[in-house]
Image 1 (cartoon, rainbow, N blue to C red):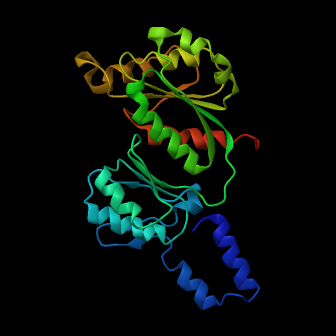
Image 2: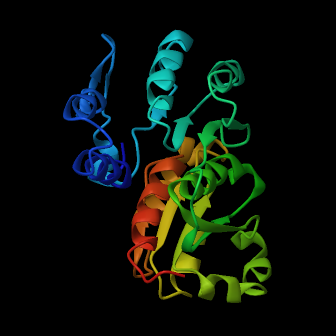
Length: 251
C-alpha cells in the first residue's frame, strides 16, 4: 500500500464507506507478510515510495512466483530483476500487465496512472553495456522518472558524445554505464553540472578483472560530482537517480 492508497482508506473509514474491521483486515499484512521462506516488506511503499523489488537470482522459480503473487495482490507497480526467461514467463502468467524486458532481464508492471517526472539520461560507452543500462532505464521509468537514452558513445570515438552534448545539458541526472577502461563517467562529469552516477560493467578482456578495473577508474575520477555504483548494478543506479530526479520541481 502506498501513501495515496492509505489516505484513501482512511478517508473511506471517516466517511463510513469502510468499517474499522474492514480497514484492519486490509492493513493486516502491514508492515510485512510472512511466507515462511520470505518476509515481504509491504510497508516499503510508505517509507520509500516504491514497493519491495524481487531479486530473482538465487531463488527458485516457486519462491519467485510465491513472492510475486503476494506483491501483485497490492496492485502497485512491480519489479523483478535478474529474471531469466523461464522465471519471467512464470511471473507474467500471474499478471496480464507484466512485461518482460529481455535485455534488462527484468519483469515490470508500470503504474496504472503516472506522469513521468524530471529527466534522467542513461549513457553507455558501448553496446555491450546495454543490459546494465536497460536495467537502469526500465527501473527508473517504473519508479516514475522520465528517461532518455544515449548509447554507444564511448571514448574510443568521443566525437559521438560531443556531437550530442546538448542532450547531456538537458538532463537532471545522468547515469553513465561503461566497462573496459571505465573512463566515460569522468568525461561526462567534466561536461555537466548535474549529478553523474557511474556504473562499471563486467565487460572487458582479462585485465579488466570482471569490471574491477572500470570500478577503480570511476572511484578515482578527477571530475567533481560523480558517484559510483557497484559492478553491473543498473538497478541501484536507477533508484538513486530517481530519488535525485524527483527532488527538483515538476517538469
